[in-house]
Every structure is written in C-alpha cells, then in structure tokens.
Image (cartoon, rainbow, N blue to C red; front, top):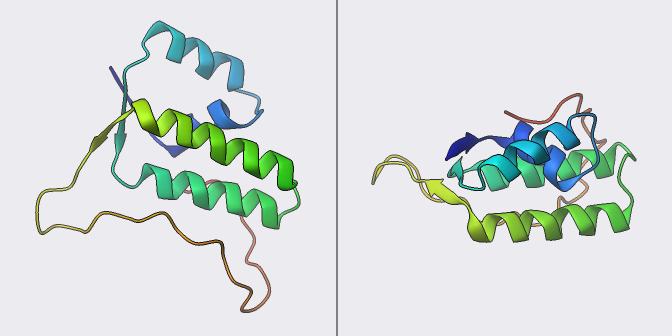
Length: 107
C-alpha cells in the first residue's frame, strides 16, 4: 500500500505530464491510502482548473467521476477523535468576487 496525496491523485483523474508514471504506480500496487481530507484537496484543485479555464464542463465532470470511483476503493487515514471533523463534499463555489489565482494544486 502507498500513501497518496492530492498531487499524486490529480494525474489519475486528469491528463497531466506525470499521468502515465502515476498510473503505472497504481497498477503495481492498487492499495491506496489517503489522508482524510484528500478528496477536498482534489475537488479544490478541479475547481481551480475550471476557474482558470483549463477544464471545461466535460473535463470537470469526468475528473469528479474518476475521483468518485477512486474514493470508493481507497482507505482513508482519519484524524484522532476530537482532532478535526470529517470534511463533507464541498458545494460548488459561489461567486463573491474575482477568482483568486490557482497557481498549483493544494498539498
């Protein structure tokens, strides 16, 4: 089993320079362990790409669908009780001002 973070999952759900290499890693060891908020980081990165115009509606839907598929089989490392609450699936962002630049995916 490998510990996967947002930056390693993004190439699995969208076409990126490291996509082939990361897919090979997943084929070698399909056991995915992720931090409890990894899904939130991935959704945030997808939303960022939409705001920057890098993803159209079809690419966003595809990335979110692939994320849903991956998350069904991964193991989440949860925080100790009382440390933090579990994140819920965030709602789409509302417009409350100019978008902030998203130069890189969140950690």
